[in-house]
Image (cartoon, rainbow, N blue to C red; front, side, top):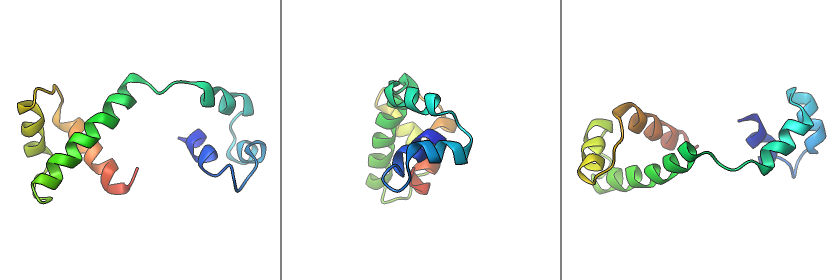
Length: 94
């Protein structure tokens, strides 16, 4: 999370200074740049698109339980807490 923040603001602040201020190692930051995205994160990103489509199709009326039903009807194996978490993250703009 901190590494993403540093990457996002690299045009404003040098990475070395941001690492020092935020208390993370420069080597750890640079290693995170080369690291691939985890399988869970990739799956969450794809699932978020499906959740957004279901939410839009319901005219923003469906909550996590109904969206969960839609996803399961579509053959996706997912839990309600995960759907609710992804909906919260989407609402917060993450």
